[in-house]
Length: 92
Length: 441
Image 1 (cartoon, helix red, strand yellow):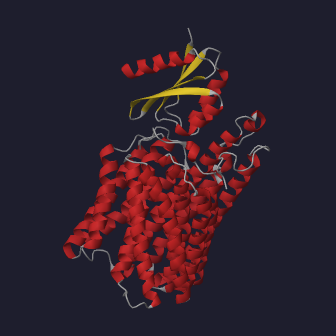
Image 2: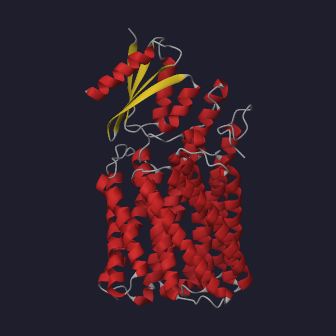
Image 3: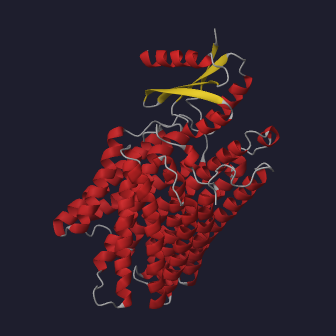
């Protein structure tokens, strides 16, 4: 069963959310995905994630509440896992 | 703003907006020198030196920064790559810079040939820019409150340019058009309260909550204030007498509502750490609230502001330098290092050694440098107000203000040049300064 690490960057000023996410991704164990809680959708960060070989799914929960699931694209088992987790967030 | 369709891959190379930002302070320096050599400028709004001074500031400095920033933002907002964006921007910047210089020389030395040249150059600059902006804003389809503000701001800019070109044509003694003082009023009103105010409003709805961890602006406010402002400004231009006054009252009410709401949003920010961009915003919005409230008071009770204080000019400068210039200076302290940092991060993604050595935002424009910018700017604005309050010492105060303004813009230029040099040095050796974008010039 894949592992999900949660990181809340909602109260950080740019560019700290991006720095914290990159730092956490570097420390992530194989088979783990990252769930980021943010007050905005970090659009400028997405091309960078793609270049680093990560995929992501984001969900808007409220005007100032987003969750973003990030995983290594090469680990195919993580995509359905993050999809399910994202769907659960929307339903709850 | 609906961010779903945003694409940062379409951002022009960082050097594209940065060239606009690096040219702009030179016009601020020229404006300061113009005031220093002609301290009598404040005597009348029709004084040739005043016309030259005002246009060096509004076109040469403010518009140069605003156009540069829009060129960076519009491809992102529209999710479209502007086909000729990078080449076009060279022309826009060149036409705007030369047009502004020509206009200022024309006004200052009463040389109609220079005014004629400036009509052509400025019309070309704005036709190119508004086409660029128009394509981006039309392609985007429906959007949020920020896009609404940008669209209304673009229409206001179009109106400002048309009125300006028409008024300038009268200097060429063409027979088909006559000079109208009211046209200058409408030109200034649409430029300041339309283009300037709406653009800042739209940008603030995004950047204040984003950069300062503040709550979002109330949704009703982000739709009603720009709409009410634009409609009432349009009504003020086409009507006269009591309808004109009523339209202006509505416009100023929208502005005051925005000013207090933005101050409240900033006050409720979560992280109250010392930040000079926040201080610039607070100073700008306080000036806006003051100037708009005094203007409203004068409309409601005509003559309440003593005429010997030149209320028309004083309020205009309070808005232009106290509000618009404060916002621009504050935003440059934040946006420039932020964009540099983003571009550097991407350029160094695959070079761990370069990545580790990257400067942080505070090293690109240190707080100490922003603190001096803030101090110099506060003193400049104070100097401007004193020029009107101390009428008997106006010429002396104008010289002092010009020196303060010269220091303010020189400091900005130094700050931007130092940041740019640090940025270029931090790029990995394998990377050209435009690595971030494949469509660079």
